[in-house]
Image (tube, rainbow, N blue to C red; front, side):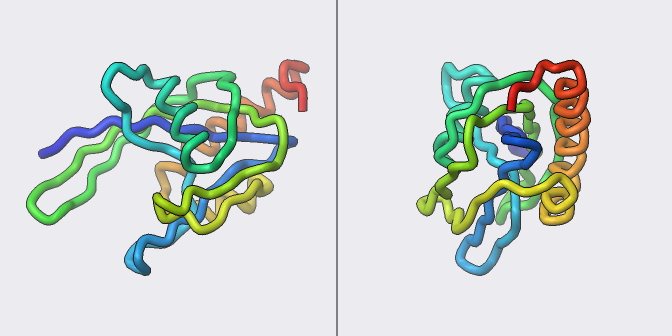
Amino acid sequence: MIEAVSCGGIVIFRGKILLLYKNYRNKYDGWVLPKGTVEDGEDHADTALREVKEEAGVTPVILKYIGKSLYAFRIPDNIVQKEVHWYLMKADNYYSKPQKEEYFTDSGYYKYHEAYHMLKFSNEKKMLELAYKEYLRLKKDHKWSN
């Protein structure tokens, strides 16, 4: 078994959530949250920020650590056990540019209920739920400025 660690962000601007559409050679397609693998010497927060910037062209600010999701998937000769650390992030505009080199063909900001139903993976839906509840709490407490 291979163990892997990734980090990502639930990026929100004016109540809408950033999603990316990935289409990998017509074998894999669906809407996902930006995330990626931790590089040597990088902490989890830095990885999450870097991955959001690389995959979506967005430079967000981290507001809070949300939690981690765990899942496994099969590759030809092994099983990968993946741990993903998630952060609630704030953007300062609706701009995004999907990273074509990573097979992202579209990106955009969507209302919560739209994003929830568009997301391909249940573990990402769960993290979105937790992050959006925190976003609403911060907004209610006047700690969210857009």
